[in-house]
Structures are given as C-alpha cells and as structure tokens.
Length: 437
Ligand SMILES: NC(=O)C1=CN([C@@H]2O[C@H](COP(=O)(O)OP(=O)(O)OC[C@H]3O[C@@H](n4cnc5c(N)ncnc54)[C@H](O)[C@@H]3O)[C@@H](O)[C@H]2O)C=CC1
Ligand SMILES: N[C@@H](CC=O)C(=O)O
Ligand code: NA
Image (cartoon, rainbow, N blue to C red):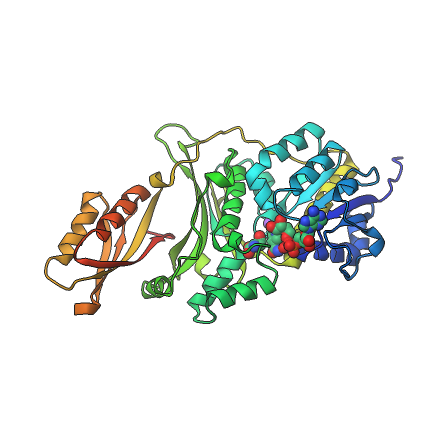
C-alpha cells in the first residue's frame, strides 16, 4: 500500500486583494480541499512588504518579508505568486522552480513579457507553472485552451478581458459617472491594477491578448507584439456616436489567424487591443460592469463563449485555488501537468495589414460637392464605403461614414487625407467597428 504523504506546504507571495482571498479560501475550505487533493494544503508562509499591517485570518507567525528565503525553504512544496509586476516576481518563481517547486501565478504582465524564461524553467526542472487567474480572472479560459481545445484548430479569440475599462465604458454608456469617478469605483472594488495606467492604456488587456494568442496558436507572442490602444482617448462624442449607430464601445482583445492561400496554419497572426464599436445586438454588448467575456472560434468545436467575473479578489482567488488543487494533485500523483508548446512560430503581422472597418464622424462645411470630395478620399485609398449619413445643416453639418472591411493602413491613410481637406472642419471621431459586416 502507498504510504500516506504529509500535507502539501504552500508559500504565498503577496497578500493584497487576491492574496488575502487565497488565504481565506485555504482556511475556509481546508477540509474539502484536502479531500479533493488527497492530502491537506497547509500555508507554510506569507511573504509581504509591510509586516506591521494586521491581516485578518493570517497567522502573524507565518508572515515574513524574506520572500527569497521562503521560496527556497525545504518544507515548501508549491509557491503561489500574487505580488504582480516583473521583479522580484520573476526571480522568485525561477528560484522556486529551480528548487523543485511548482508555481501558481496570476501575473499576466510577467507571463506576457517573459513567459518564455518561466516556461523553459518549468520544463527544465519538471515543475508545473499554472496561471488561469492571469487572464479573465475566475473564468476558466486558459485551461480550456491549453487542454480541452489542444486537439482543435483555433481561428480566432475575441473578447473583453479587462474589467476596469469595461466598468468605465459601461458607466459612460449608461450616462452615469464620468471617467475618473468610474475609475475610482473600479479601484475601490479591487478590479484595477496597482497602477491603473495598465488598465486604461490597454497594457493589461494587451498582456492577456499575448497569453491567449500564444496558447491558441501555439506560437510565441509577447506583449510587445500586440497592437495596443487604450480608452483614455474615448470621448463622450465617441460614445454618443456609437449610440447613434445602435452600437456600444468596448475595449476588445482580438487574436486572429490570418489565412494564406496554401498552408493550413495561415500566413501569420494578428493580435490587437483597441476600443471598438460593436452592435448592441452582439453578445459582447451586453457584458456590463467589470464582467469579461471571450469568444473562441475553432474549426471543429465551432464558437464557444466564456463569460464571468474577470477581476476582483474572490473571483481571481477562485482561479488561483483551482490551479493550486490541480498542481497539488500532480504533485501527489508524481506527474507534472502539460507544458507550453510554441512549435508553430507564426509571425505576428503588423497592424497595417489587419483588415477592419471604420466609423468616421466629420464636421464639414455644408456646401455642394463636399460629399464627393470626401468620397474621393476613400476611393483614392481603395476603401469602400458601406453607409454615409448627413446630420445637421450649415455650421452644424456633419457626415457619418462607415466603411466596408479594408486594411488598417488604408483606413489610416484615408483619415490623414480627410484631415487635410478644406471642406472638413474636424475629424470628430474615428473608431474601428467590429462584430459583423
Ligand atoms: N485584482 C484583480 O482583480 C486581479 C489581479 N490579478 C493579478 O494578481 C496579482 C496581484 O494583484 P492584486 O492582489 O490585485 O494586487 P495588490 O497590489 O492588491 O497586491 C499585491 C501585494 O503584493 C505585495 N508585494 C509587493 N512586492 C512584494 C514583495 N517583494 N514581497 C512580498 N509582497 C510584496 C504588495 O504590498 C501588495 O500587498 C497581479 O499580478 C495582478 O495582475 C489577476 C487577475 C485579477
Ligand atoms: N485590472 C484587471 C484585473 C484582472 O486582470 C481588470 O480590470 O480586469
Ligand atoms: Na481565467
């Protein structure tokens, strides 16, 4: 008979919004977790920056500021990293894996910047590296891509992966709070990153897009490869323009395989994050507050939709605990989990080659021939117009143009050209349109 093993000892790095919830769940669900793993999970230590702070439910004897010492201790089996940022998180995780420990992390910034180093270490030392919480918080998305869909051929991953910006855009759309007020609320609710610039400038969503693209297309993608635009430039006029089109503005992460004539894998991938209009009838339009939703389109599976809480302490801790149990079971069973494979090595194509649609709102002089001059600018760059509408007269004259799909570079050139026309007083709003033709 196999001898019963002792408890698995867990080192927790960071005890902020997510870490404190991990501690709570480990305590409150101890018996169930032990039954599911086959042995108890025991907290070996909690590394913090400010030890003097009182932390509810954390035994002060477990608290340390020596994270490095904690991850290399012989009585630690698994390390949970919820500090965030690049360093010291990277060094701590590498040290942990070098000394034979498996790692669970929620750190998308690090995985998207230098995941390759961490994955290489996991392979070299036979350790597990699990990170479900890093993308779309509680929503099971990475495990489905990494395991359930690994036998399929993914074409596209499209979704809302940042709760803070969705909360802000939702408030702007519903006419509630302004930008700053909504951001403060998102921070108070524990959705925002330590530096909310990461949220509102799209860095957080870009990191998640890189992780998703890498898993979906088995190809190396880092945050630096992702075309990124945040929501700080989204104005009340953009939101109102979207309403006028029966659309809503959402910050979207889009990862697409770009088809080629011959090869099945395509000629590359497009990975991008930007605010875009989507029709109110589109399922993503009904994703409110800080919720996330992601569509995965795969050859055999068809379209799959994942929806739920993408941010916040308890939802994120749920994903961390799920990984912790999975890793603990692997330790108990003596078999490591799956490793990342990036064999496809597809290039990430420049944004200019990406095919999208544009909505363009122009303040124009109301005189004969303006429409023709404007239309000529589109024709010059071979961008076909789907619809054009005039709003107002005289000083108030405005044109709203929606294009058919065209390369982004051509659309940018059209906007540049329009800015140079005498009959165009102002290009009031430019936004990509996603969702449907
Ligand atoms: N809050 C959320 O909704 C989500 C957060 N995440 C990720 O989870 C991680 C943690 O996020 P939060 O808990 O929200 O951040 P937080 O800022 O609330 O917590 C991080 C904690 O780590 C501590 N810390 C910093 N440097 C340290 C060090 N050298 N040693 C020990 N402790 C140190 C900080 O004092 C802080 O208490 C980040 O990677 C974040 O991107 C992922 C999904 C959702
Ligand atoms: N700051 C992030 C937290 C989760 O990743 C968000 O707002 O979605
Ligand atoms: Na997740």
